[in-house]
Length: 327
Image (cartoon, rainbow, N blue to C red; front, side, top):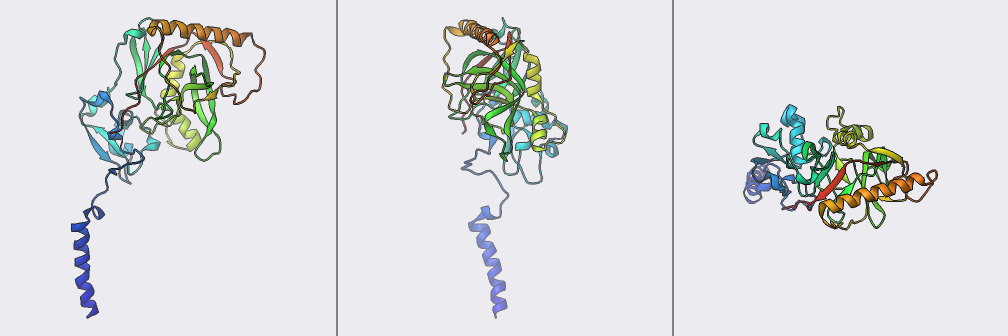
């Protein structure tokens, strides 16, 4: 009797689960609430309005390489994400036309404000993208990870005034707390009134604004050194920008500016781009001359820029827009 009853109950329970709670047996999908913002398709990038793409929910057995073969770097750039941060449960954008994806760039091929400069970096916060311009023409570009909400990267016109190929954060550590967070190929473009320094540097790219104000670029070489993955580094944008930006060495930094970690206020543009550029150049040169006249570097506070090479005549840096909305 008990056996017959159990045989009767099993199909009833299965029927109840499937009919009344279908999600318990359905295929996994993105969370509707998504508190961690793992659905990258919900970030609103204006450049994607006229590009056809579809969502893909990443499953446990999948990776960018297994899904897209040799085209994985283009899909990674399309999503502003590195391989290390693609994991099961995440939703990514997949372009319908892979050929078009290979040439995707949300920045203009020509940019008038950059015409009078040999090297000009444009950072678009809304697109989470960074371009290298030479006399107004785009030489190359790459996705970026800028300041998250509450730690926005300051906007305005600046100039790179310090460089450090092997820089490390003075405020933040790696995930396992074993070392200071690496900031390879670092280029300082601004020091705020609160003495917080903002750099362009190698960083993890999680597919969204994620920094404390700095601007991060792909560098799988740094990730392999620190985390052991990926085994074969491919995306090395921070190295490319660092070598391209250049600049004349005028000394070494020994200030006590902290790396970006506090909420950054928006820096207004005074007198338009022309005036802003002249002011940035003047400030950079005055700073360089003052530093060069000082004695040997001293041990100070956070010392975030200590040992970095001071430069002049390096690339101009324009930061524009606001971080993308999450729909």
